[in-house]
Length: 360
Image (cartoon, rainbow, N blue to C red; front, side, top):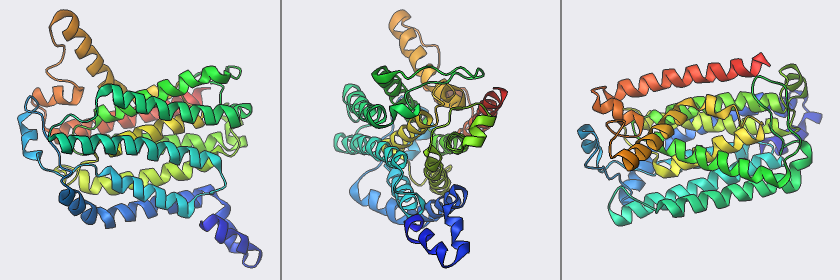
């Protein structure tokens, strides 16, 4: 909104030309979403309690988690609201990539909200069936893919670039739908699995989206993209305003979500953030880099897969409990230690991802 209302006035007052710059508007989105999360936190928490959207705890998990029963969940609502408002205020609303990202972010958030509401209705830790969630996630992914292929395939959006090398595939056409589906469904569920400790998913995803924001800015900047030998996607740099808005919202939510958490993001937040991370990775052409950048999410997801496969095939468990963060808790690690060390690992993965981009 500011971009469209204030920028035209630079003809009369030249300093207003600064609203043209993505970096300024990204910083504005960050501060706005951060402040909104901090301000609306107490209100949203009371509202969730009034609606009965509170957490149910599995009896077979770490005993320390039983004290969290009744904590408000679906707090991802405040993250979604903060990001949407900040992007509408600071983003270039004529940029379709921004709307694609916002659309995926909100759509996956609504799936997560439905899951959180279902858990409340059932009065258990189980919400929508796995098949229902996957079906809805796939539908959103296909919608995103079709929009990209139909309108922006000629801009290189449906091509892939491999890490370390400078090799770029030719346009994949409608075969790119499979890539979109894999990235979005895998990322959404991986972030959702990571959301099991106070501040864990919030902190790790914030670090991931901040790095993706930088990579998106590079992808939309012809000089930087050429220097780093990454694919140049015209106008995609505007998505970094969204990324910084989500980073600010993550920091604001972490204020209420840090141990001991006053509110959980629930599937509402984890699915929305997972969908956003996957969509941004697609738009800045870092599909192959995402498993490195989101290394913590990959570890958590693989631990669940290994546990399920092992138990079904041999009747034995590899981990005391999956996802991996619960295994560490049952080994005697305090929740705060697990979260802190996971954040350190996430930071290391972000550095590795940046090095991989620079190596090219």
